[in-house]
Length: 402
Image (tube, rainbow, N blue to C red):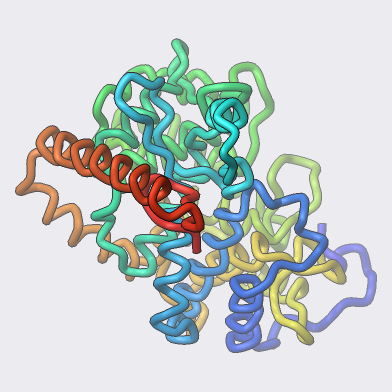
């Protein structure tokens, strides 16, 4: 419920402008320096970069990043890429940061650190989103290895874990798995039928989707489920009556903004989660555009830019990006169109489709073989370089330290 509904004095947001330039500067600041309060998010820096880069894209403001800064972000992102050597367990993908990538001559310490260097589905999804949005051609990736890493974390019930060890499995990572495979245009050994079964079994009595079996229907989870179905080409397997009931559940989540569950307060981010779910279902026009916009604008920070979860709260990159996406769905002037199921701009999606067309003419198995040969040569060259020049710092077998 918004502040207006509680009769608490808040800004008159009906006619307030969206402060596009302030929001763009807000994102640029987060790409240059993170505030101390975000120190606890060190292991998920990739997601912050995703919100900032993709937010600038939705604001049509990527020009604020110099060519050098764009390349630095691309190289920094690749620095978190994990590709196992032949014979090692399959853990391909991107890490959220380099916090477990260390420099030492202690072989035992290196072996111990290696045990914690594995790809994470959410970090892999957001890292791919950053690279695609910045126009990278993904030529430094081995698509097969990454999708093999996705298949390695699929559970027998069709769900996915975030990584190979120590992770819960739920609908969030089902979405990430589907998004990764769709972006890389390759599904490999991922079992889409089992994925479909898990998603359908997660529909609750009220037709919201739960995080996992026997949970409560939730707006974010409902988005993840519907997006995964669309990205895996399986949305048409759901019967018409069920889809209509899901639409009804989503439409009923609007108060002025949107809530994530019945009897919960509205929250800026659900203007995306619920809005995108309805976009996927071709039913967003059933919502109240002015009421949604009014609530989002109540959470806008007029001083430093950004959007918050609730009015009079501190803005953050997550709610700022999703708030802008929610406004884009309503046709807000100055904002680019958003591709709902991938949660990126249509401009970025068009870049991705160009890559898909290019990949159609190539054999992924041959690309994989060539990539592994290159990797072996780079590892050998890196070893020789370290032996000959001990001052060289290598934080990844793929690139030097930034």
